[in-house]
Length: 198
Image (cartoon, one colour):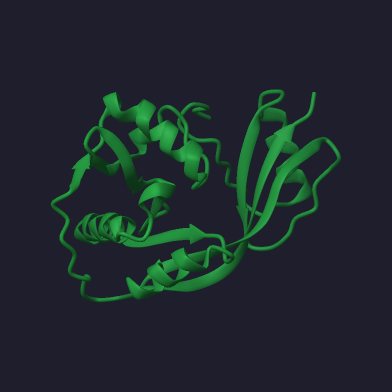
């Protein structure tokens, strides 16, 4: 596991045996994230830091929405401090110092300040996940997220893959935006953030 890139795990059946084996390989006091299709039974060895319903949405539209995207620029290693600062303010999900290496992160700046960004994360063929979609609280409602998501859709579909993403159902503004851009809910899921107790 690359602890500074991602803290995700995938299990075949989410069975007690799978979870026990995961517990063995996770370092003490470390966090791990699981996306599961339903609630799972966890031993008392795990400290549940987060358990929340999640929607998995898949892009199902043929054409792309037209967006003026000349504001976005590719993000590089020099932007990592700004990216970490923005995700700390907006909490779009786990984002670590090397998450940028998962690919195709783009941002929008106001002068020298990063105010919005999005990129790619999980890639279970033939799908690619759009991730870390976030806008600084002072700049919401200006269409920045839509521009960035449309750009990611274009990149992913051009590579022959299918865009998908995850969103909390109580984030109604984001849900409406994704539906407007051509995403449909595939299924309800549960996200767990677990910590290995000593």
